[in-house]
Image: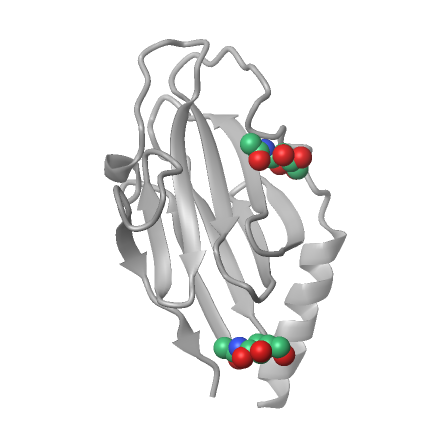
Length: 154
Ligand SMILES: *[C@@H]1O[C@H](CO)[C@@H](O)[C@H](O)[C@H]1NC(C)=O
Ligand SMILES: *[C@@H]1O[C@H](CO)[C@@H](O)[C@H](O)[C@H]1NC(C)=O
């Protein structure tokens, strides 16, 4: 147990100490050799949620999203299509979730554009009933697919 706590603290500190890459927000125009993506995570709950998004190379930092606020970022997908981002969510310290917000399981639900000046887009909606992905920011539930649940912290 002690070593677990130590590992946890170690991870917290080393994660904070690592440089936070300045990944541009979603509306930044980029010229990508392959696909250009923009991801949006919207909080659709009255309670604020804490979000931390990471990839292999980037830590987008810890953010708190109030009702209807979103976190968004854009990036070039690598040519091998191995680019992924995952997110950790915390709701009141009583519920958590951690999963890939951009990977092979999510992109089939996203909006693929073939215009290189326009980003392909993925939207996430965080609700009390779970996590939904979709190609547009449409009023719930039209166009949304539930992919993940909250886990109760015990
Ligand atoms: C994207 O996030 C930025 C903050 O990083 C925010 O100012 C902007 O409004 C967001 N974009 C949209 C479309 O909400
Ligand atoms: C989160 O906290 C708010 C305010 O303290 C409370 O109203 C709400 O019921 C809590 N939700 C959960 C899931 O714990």
